[in-house]
Structure formats: C-alpha cells, structure tokens
Amino acid sequence: MEQPPALLIHGFTGGTFELEPLSELLDERGIQAHLPEMPWSGERLVKRNKESWEDWLSEVTSYTNRFACEHSQFDLVGFSLGGMVAAYLANRFPVRRLVLVNAAVIYVSPVRFIRNFGANWRQTSIRKNLELNKISLHSVWQFIRLVRYTRREISKLKVPTLIAQSMQDSIVHPHSAVYIDRHIQAPSHIYTYEQSNHQLCLGPEKDLAITHIVEFLERREGS
Image 1: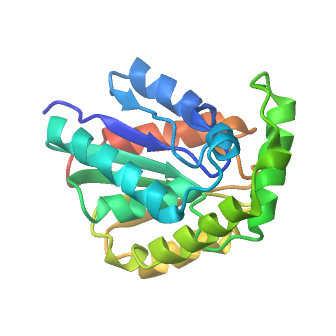
Image 2: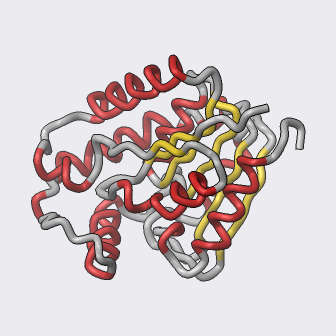
C-alpha cells in the first residue's frame, strides 16, 4: 500500500521553518510532505493583523478540503497552535494518523509565544525582517479564542495519535500531553523529550523526535 502524504501545520507567530527538518526527512523517506504557510504565521500577522480566528480556521479548513479532494487519505502533523487545529481537522477529514507536537492545550502564556519565537528567530539563520512588536494584541486574543474553540476536539479524536511533548517547554505546559492522552478516544502514545523547549523540531533532541514521528507515520495499519 502506498504511503499517504503528510500535511504539516506550523505554530502561532512562527512559520514553515518550524517543521522543515521533519518535512525534509519525510521527503527523503518517500513520504510526500506538504508544509504550507498558515494564516497565523509571524509575517502574515504583521501584514494582516485584523483577521479573526474564524478567518484563520476557515482558510485552513478550505485548504485541507482541497487537499482531501486530491488525496483519499493523508497523515496530519500539527505543532503548537497547529496541533490544536490539526485535532479539529482530523475530526472532519480522512486522516489516517495524527501527530500532535507540543499542542497548545494548556499554555503558560500566549505572550510568551511571541517572545519564544523572537528568541528562536534571533538564534537561527532565518531572519526575514520580521518586526515582532507589530504583532497586535488582537492577534494574541484570536490565538486564545482559537485554542479555546479547538480544545473540545481532543475528546472526539478517533485516529491513532502520537503525542510529542517537550518537558522544558516554557510556552505549552508539559501536562498538555497528559491531558490529551486522558481525553482522546483513539489509540495514543506519548513521547517526552527531557532537554527540549517549545521548538522541538529545531532543538537538541530534534533528530530523536523526528525519527519517532517518521517511524509512527511509516507503521502499517494495526501496528
């Protein structure tokens, strides 16, 4: 059976770079990875900072609907806010397997999302003239509302799910993984990473985490 493609959803104020290491390995392993820019990306929040969480969710749902029309089945990976939206999408589209990376079920502080992204942005080569101070409080409030709206989706999940959680995450509380595992209806497995902060796929244990994710997506049905 041919390996289905994977749709990857990055986090709030971030960008596709957050999941690029995973996307690259999936492509190397023959798994077609799709990593589109989300409406809550940092650059877009600066340029279009009056959009609502409903706008964001509608746009991503429309994109996923087009994706589903092209693929009878696919895998879904969501990071941070992207994990919450991935849970929403997994309940509405033909998702085979779901991966939730530091999903923002219980967050420490939404403002820290911006600070964390800013610190990471300064430490990497990915500097695209993004002025973080232009990300409005309106956008932060939309993030909070979208998390609240999508949290209810966790208890409805029925697809096999991998839960990846950084234990040094200063943005998403590590107990989020426990919450998901307790409330999900589907078979689930938790991987925890003791040395990693929020940006798991860019941090010190990225190779281990990405290997776990790829192995999970490559498993045959029933395993």
